[in-house]
Length: 279
Image (cartoon, rainbow, N blue to C red; front, side, top):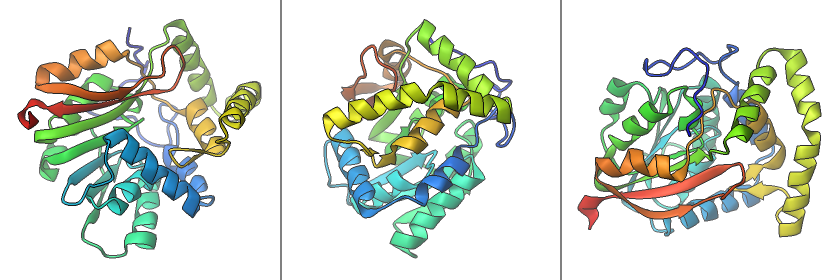
């Protein structure tokens, strides 16, 4: 099953505008996250990207970061030696990415932040060219047109390149529940406070799990609190099973290189697909 959003954008190539009830303010949340960013979190982001790709050697690789968000994982790719192109649909997210670019890369030509753009805008994407790695972690399911977003990302992978995506896991009726939570959260201040307070036990459980694993604050370098806010508010929202994702990507000439699945739990399944020209 794929849970479709109730928004007006599916299939139309136009995302819901930032700052409207049809879209969570992702960039504003990441701006607050950057206030807490430290060297430990950056190192964690580096390690997470290397784990996902199976290498720390990205020198000479052209990487497209679709939906750069805070900019942290564009930074990680740059630190691992890649030539990075970043964009996001949210102006605040673009500003976050440029902040990290300026702080750590300066005017290094290996990192280009092209500004605002939508993964649903095929003409915009075509102007960027093709890439060795097309990376989009936890983004495509927030466009309101998940399948179209995946197809457009696929088209930016050069022959022999890799598609690296993370998408929300399909949990059936549980995913339906989270759709309602996210709609209430984005309905206004009352809904936002109510959903935040009502789900604090959920946050507490996540804290306990992190403590048990010895990783309280960091996961891919992200703050637990800001990740929690992103999860509660993240709208539009769609999910897909691993089989569904494979069914979308494989016919375009890709084979699955590696995957990290969450099983029956919520969260993002991570996939690395390689274009068959690499074999």
